[in-house]
Image (cartoon, rainbow, N blue to C red; front, side):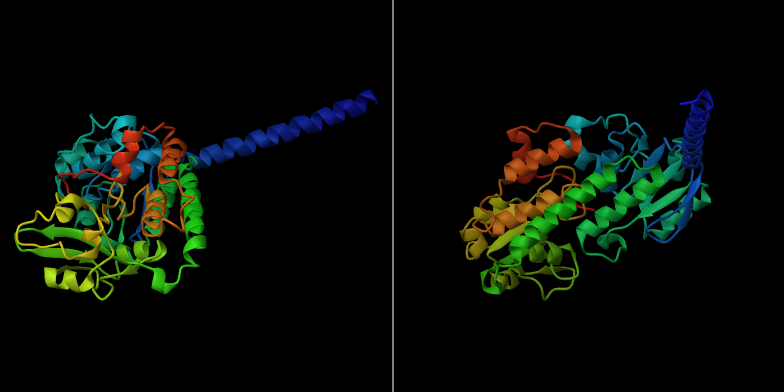
Length: 373
């Protein structure tokens, strides 16, 4: 090869390399500029570049979701106390540090804008349908991004769809770090795996399932989760029939109605201080559960909780669906080792090696003193 050809080739290679470098630098500069995103209320929000100070006000479940996405709390300056409690009582308390987060700027759904402003957040995450809070934050000059659930103004009763929307919105807001797609892919695979086996279960083999949202032991009323809520999704996709399908959303019913349902399985959406043993041992004064088939068979459970009670959209939704399917159809899902599934999930999503105690607390959670958002 002639010297002139070698020089020409070297020049082309150099120019191509320089061009690639220019493209990379250009893309990096674009990423590091303020940019517009659309939140779940349809608001177009201009978020700053390189966000490092975020506060979460009324949307409790976003505390663990944000912490997962950012793989830590270093960019979180403050958060809803209930959300922190859920995260700390679950596996995240072993993995991440929540101790230095401020919580005094929000009490329930009431925001102290002066205390919040003092934290100097670049972005505030709030419950999207809280238009009063949106106005408050706007008037304070605080950039705010709304996240919704079916319980807070969202349209979907599919918890997977909600968690996917949250993760994609975080990706738009904070930049892509790969963790959104990792969890979304896991969930899609879990749904497909369960659906493949559930599709062959006949209606006659689908058990009646009742999801209890809460029990008022004073008024002797049970708040059941009917249709038009997450309950319908969970029960149907796991291969069951909703015993309270005739009830719209969440509704208080008496024990006579529960006796009429006579479910084969009962799941608490969250513990709220009442646990399966209270039904199985029939210890709730003035409420006789002894005639209910699920109680007689001791098929009473609480939705799993690793980062948040998973009846609502949560990081652990994919494991929860497999847990429910395994409970309702142990023969169909005989090859599914739910403990291994849970351990593998912890390792894959958090690079955490879960103990048997961790798994037990996840799949059979203890009572917490805070209520589901």
